[in-house]
Image (tube, rainbow, N blue to C red; front, side, top):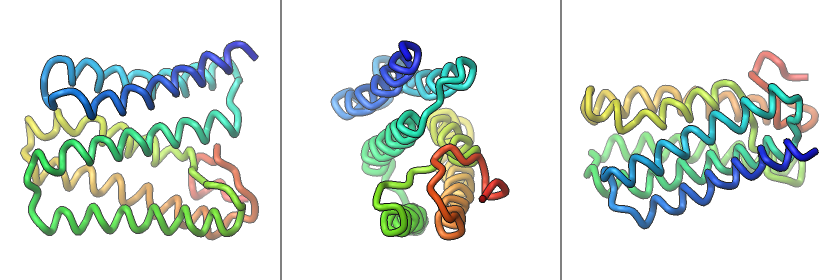
Length: 179
């Protein structure tokens, strides 16, 4: 029971770290330290929970909520900073609409937020976390297209799972595991 609390505290620290990023000058050393800490906590909480067999529906929900908050903060920080072309903003909007549709359907079916903890969601989060690296090496268009592909796949998978599932399983790993 104690380890479960530690894992949840690690996840909560990511939420605080994400909000802290809003008050730090982007792309500075401090920004990268907090940003990297958020990424490390994202990897650590799930790893520790699985290794200690202390996963829970609440932990999965909290982790997904922390991921969603981190992604929202990253968008809030980088969209104005990068002066993105209109077509990129439209594609971001498409992913957001798919995510919100999945959430709305899940809330309608299960009367709770149905944030899922799939492998594709984790992969999309990791790829998004690498955005500053991709941006530096590949440029905005290539970096965005990589992130958009991963985010679209994970959003569509979550939508399909939410539509097809008879009961909520936040820890479902992929669309191939629907009960």
